[in-house]
Length: 147
Ligand SMILES: [Zn+2]
Image 1 (cartoon, rainbow, N blue to C red):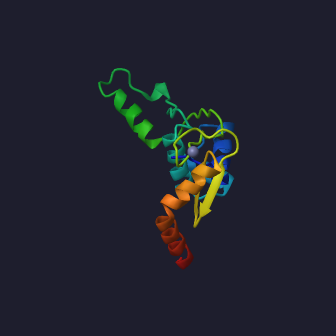
Image 2: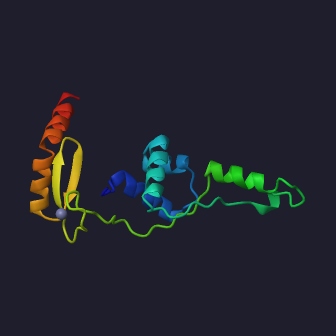
Image 3: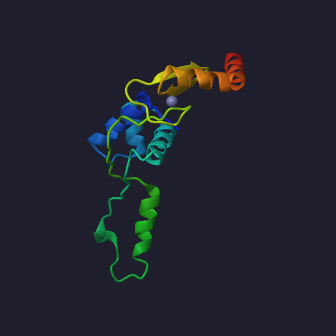
């Protein structure tokens, strides 16, 4: 599936690039995007592989070396994801043609319907996709109009 980053993704990424250890709440304040949205977008970006690594910042002085359960606080820190480092490869996501599944070189041919966007390598693929899925596209358009 081709993925297009929107402005919300970009502001969140930019905020994280400045300081990858910010909390979701801090990012929310800074970007004016709600905390649940920041969290959801962040998770999506991780799923996409754009944010490559989530590392809790661990205060080792707080880990009891003698304790058999020494690793447990580390695990709970990881779950909290309160602090993380972010590595970003680039804001461009490689797109694949929605019809032939080939890579898209240069500017993609875009098909927009309802609130969807689909990307194609050439106008031929775009036209073929439109033919093949015309029923579904019309249905989605209809649903979108009714909202
Ligand atoms: Zn194609």
